[in-house]
Image (tube, rainbow, N blue to C red; front, side, top):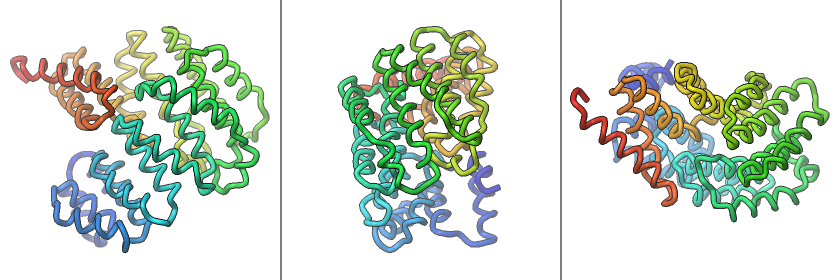
Length: 351
């Protein structure tokens, strides 16, 4: 209930709901950010650096970033967590996701490297590759090549000694990362070979849908890169949201990227109405949605503009600009283009 109130921008109702039970640390941090209470925000951030339970710090960052979509305000809490000795790998992974969501690959990569140096989260090196391969981050080819080499040499059998529900699927995650990286490096044949390995490998019945989705995402990425959106839509039929419960919170298994690929393929085939439904409903409220919020907003702005829904287009472009306002320099042209669209719409009569 409180999450829905926050997402509906009804902070007053959200606060009244939680007041009945009493605010915890995460609630207090979220409302401080929402209400621009800088004094409380500073006090809670100081507690995050030393005194507050690390799980509560993670929770506060999640409520600020995942509920409010205030990524830049969540970042200091994650940096505070990453500087502490407890759970450094998890803290750095969360920080990396936050920075990548802001279009800041250089900072995200630094955090991913730190996370990869720990055995706490064995899939961290693979998440680095999967994140680097996201096309909207425009990661330099030299970085992609280096990451692909490291993952190619990485031994999933040795790393699988780690804990967590993803440990048993590390070999498949490795193939997925390598497949996406190959596609991003303009090696479609190599990417499709990894897809075949995923499709023909042996996994449990419960894990089969996840691996099938990995392969479909690689194939769809290759198809879209080659301007074959109809083919991408066909292969994405294999992505059905059948993620085992114990994997739903693991970033690599959330299926957000295949959903974005589906939306892009629909847009490329002129199916704006269907793409709009995917963008409005398929990339919000998922465990990994932060990473895709800016791209969702940009695409929705375009869809709304074509539909003549000026107010919605203005709101979406403004959201994109807000989320990526601190992006890496090479991504600035996308933000400037968003600003130009926003300026054009707001200058029109009736805006």
